[in-house]
Length: 364
Image (cartoon, rainbow, N blue to C red; front, side, top):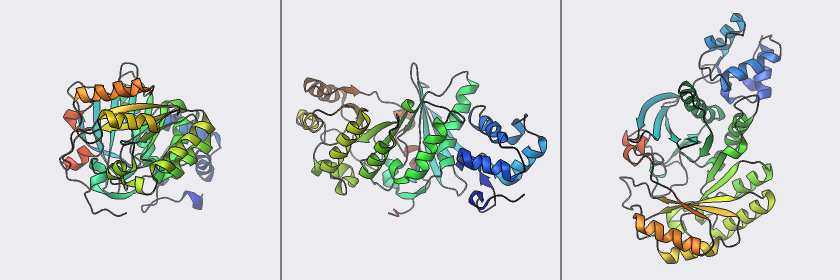
């Protein structure tokens, strides 16, 4: 039987199973002359048993497994390099995509959590000057399946170790809200009880301040968390650190944040990278407290993860602690996060840049 037009594959004619919504997966198995319930079996193998090969799907008829292998594929990511921190708590993987582009994902172990940091784009169009991904430029969006497969790769590894993935943060390469359709479809696949089944409260979407994306997330009325990379409390400095601020200055951004909290009742996390001598003084902390006054939020203070291409360095510990004390004094909930993965260049885009891969001119 013929594959439906809306499920037609890539250049080699194969359908990427992880790109499909659940109804599309049903359409595929029906087009192969199979009963609808086979879609549930395939989904279970992909997302719960974490199968990477059709041969593993032993409760499917052999003829169906062979036919699926002919018309579709599971894996589209190939690990190129893996590095683990000395404390074994952070591991980064550089993946190659079918078109030769590369992306990074990071697995972080905590006392009670195992968190994966995902990429949503090849490169990033935002161009923040302290970020290795931003320095590399932008190539293209990832598909839904390319996003979800990062999760399944690490979930498979954790499963083999008798552990399970507990949290996802969309804080890797790219701006998730600029690849909204694929990102949200991936969230749906990863939270769907028939598929991966992770609780939405265990997922966080991060943005550099793309206001339409914040508004779109608010409309979903989802339990998915929102994090915003802020880094400065005045437009002049933030435009220097986050170029997107020119399009969506702090006035527009903070209005969207307050509307989001009013609409959803959910707390926003603000990420603030402390840069020595640039945004880490007590007056900067006071400005931040004023900006966030009355807003349901939490601030994560992060020492800047340095890159070879940027002369800025992270604030020393005593400055970070002083900044934290100032925020607490002003009543702002705050956590000073520890450095993770500095010895393996775990910051966004750093492993990729070290290999000299995909540094093509900025395309946006």
